[in-house]
Amino acid sequence: MTDRTPPAAEPQGIGDAMIGWARDLYPIRRSLSGPGVRETLGYLEGLLPDLQVHEIATGSAVLDWEVPDEWTLRDAYVEDEAGNRVIDINEHGLHILGYSEPVDTTLDLEALQKHLYSLPDQPDAIPYVTSYYKRRWGFCLSQRQRDALKPGRYRVRIDADLKPGVLNYADLVLPGESEREIMFSTYVCHPMMVNNELSGPVVATALARWLATRDRRFTYRFVFVPETIGAVIYLSRHMTHLKACTQAGFILTCIGDERGFSFMPSRLGTSLTDRVARHVLDRYAPDHAAYSFLERGSDERQYCSPLVDLPFVSIMRSKYATYPEYHTSLDDFSLVTAAGLEGGLSMMQAVVRALEANHIYRATVPGEPQLGKRGLYPDLSTKQSGLSVRTMMNILAYADGQHDLLQIADIVGADIFTCAEIAQTLFDNRLLSRVGE
Image (cartoon, rainbow, N blue to C red):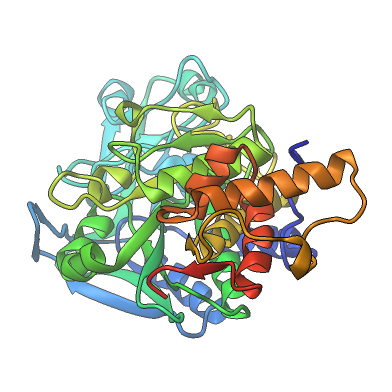
């Protein structure tokens, strides 16, 4: 019978640590660029000492894009005639339209309304709205706040710089026995939302710290970038290497709540990454929601684009743009929990274990080998021992040097972890050899 209980995340208690990191990062005013991104990467560097922080000048051409100006926000508010701040960035980081240009003016309510953003169907939520590539200014507020605004004159002040500077991003490479790479990409641009997007960076950090303590067959690459433009920048600088070395890739996003798991495949859905993700999810989250690549909305748009064609997928909890708290102030610590983050990490650790176990084997003996003389055939026949022998013989039957262990596991109807234990026993007894190693 298939075990539906995922292994506990390692190390024990890591969920509490991750939620603590997220709480530390939550107040930082992040955007595509600026001091908030640098502060965030500096915090992560404290947890990952080998993390390398990079910068690129604004105005730089990167693939079909241009790096936008750097944004530095110091203060932003709307003040009524009595001097009361009716909208204040210091009360919630989402109150500002991201990348607002500086402004200091007074205008009436009718004119102010053209610069306000709210959600009538979610009256208590502050929406997350940005304008990265067209200069404008604005404020976001709950519909209840907006409805409470009275006619009159309002002073609007946005103390910000929007000018040439740099955009920062970071990466970490953990070398393995092979130069073949497994890559994890997450983004660090979203302010004051926890599932999207503090869950990705903190799970990536925990995963990297765990991998750093283990023997690694593959090399592991972790990338922390602003969404979209950061992935474009990273590809512009590393595409040749990534296309040559990347065996599997994962975007870590929306992986911290306690709802069901979700899966976003690669463009064609047939890569090793797709196969290992589906295998692990079918084992540990059989009721997960499987989406089509046509429903994409994260950095798989960059990594899976046809002329790049890297094998990237996303294993998420609640998929972006499908849960009610998405891109609002309701995406907070009532949604994301230590248990949710721990569950997301445990799923990614299972994926890593599966990839590490996924060798290609070839049988070394013509015909069925004599297992008894090697002590591999049980001397007492039971239903369980019969199943074990049958799985062993099935693995041998498909160990033709063409199928990897993940394919064999799917063919024989067993999980890769059970198959890996059996294959290792057969390998130790010189009944299997590993191809290409």
